[in-house]
Image (cartoon, rainbow, N blue to C red; front, side, top):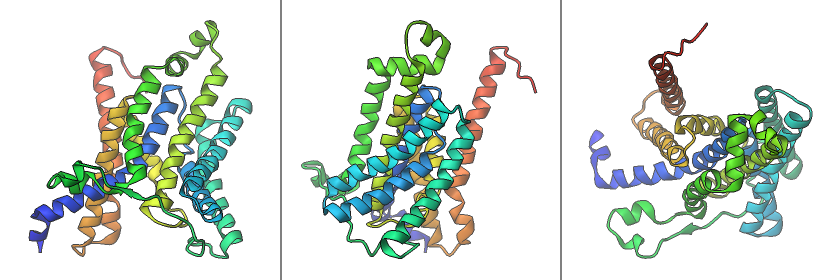
Length: 312
């Protein structure tokens, strides 16, 4: 039975699955990374992606346009981000508590809106929504093995990989990125040279929500062709973990997301071996915990090496 997992055909399908499952994590991790550089922990990314995924299918069904669905996803995700920014920056609410509250709000609101629109609390299958098409890359699609792995993915998957480069340029090569990093490193010093800390953090919230919204659009217009209740299944939190593992680098966020995508693909593979379903489903989340423990251990080791004691 195990022989089927050691064939070129299986390896090809496994790598395709890894890329597919990593796509929403890449978007989410990049959003979290931008927020982190501005000194923000965007705990509402799960809810942002969830709201974006619902609005995407609704708008695509109403407009019969794929582009309309993607724009709808961005609007839905930015709604959560704007609400988060207002509560934190204007009302000084706690980042963590507010983020968790918005995730809970998005979970309930999407189910309520779905019921109002379709009469169904589970999925949006009754809506005639559209899906983002797959792209075959010229020349690459004809390369043996690599062509099958790299070509034929959803268009948003290629946008996700392009977004890694865009994020690098934005954070490290632009004036806005310099201000984001300055505010995140020392907001008082940034304010002393005329930078509006509140404005920069507001921009960070919007950019973070924008990237996460594209991940939500992929989930309901690429990964699936419909919206399903609580379909993020913790991907927002895994994306935050990937950004933490990345150490502030967009390439690191990509690699961490691919690693978590591989863990997810592995769990699906193991499920075919008639293993305990609950145990197998734990693999992606267990990988997240292990990754964060490794990062914490490395930080602790560096602190001890520099002679910085840690007080408890």
